[in-house]
Image (cartoon, rainbow, N blue to C red; front, side):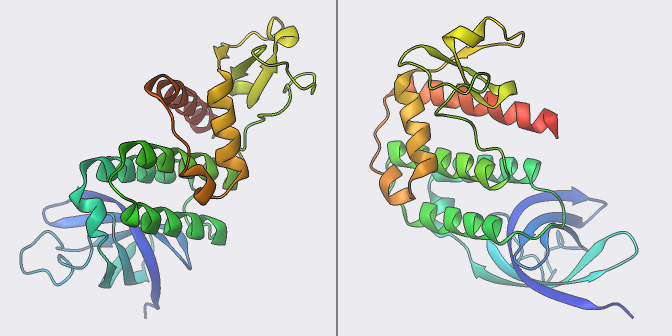
Length: 242
């Protein structure tokens, strides 16, 4: 006899399989990241069709088979309508969901990860449609996710000599986990990137202060491009390292 399990969870990804089935990636409060099979959920008369959707908070019931979990019930808790109605919010949510799925291990519960994901959805849903604030919000949660997972970058001293770099005399090396001073950069064989003082300050605020402080930040297009490059390269390094 199969044991039935229940938990709340955020639906982050959906894959179509077989003729009418779907597999959902859900980060649950009690079981961490899980993948569950929803049989016949693509059929119009499926009872699960209306209650299990991507980027929603749901309460699910599932049974554990020999190789896969099977969804038996789902109740929609929050739809996050504001996110669904705004293209930028929707894009940022999909991006964050992909990052989360890529880095978080299957079936490892973590209260800090649950709280981070819960805050991300609720704050983004309530935030006004201000492109600057929405971009900052994304990077705030992106970098705090890396911090929770143990990948906090070194932003205050050289990763090689541990000395505090002088202003405008430091570089960024993803493979070393952060800053490298001018004296040590010539010893490094991996690719080196420049990081300006404003981007560095923004990263420090994002990681050292709460969202209430970070949401007051204003970044111009040039800084935004630099932040995007640093974030992408650091993510790629972590993903490859795993």
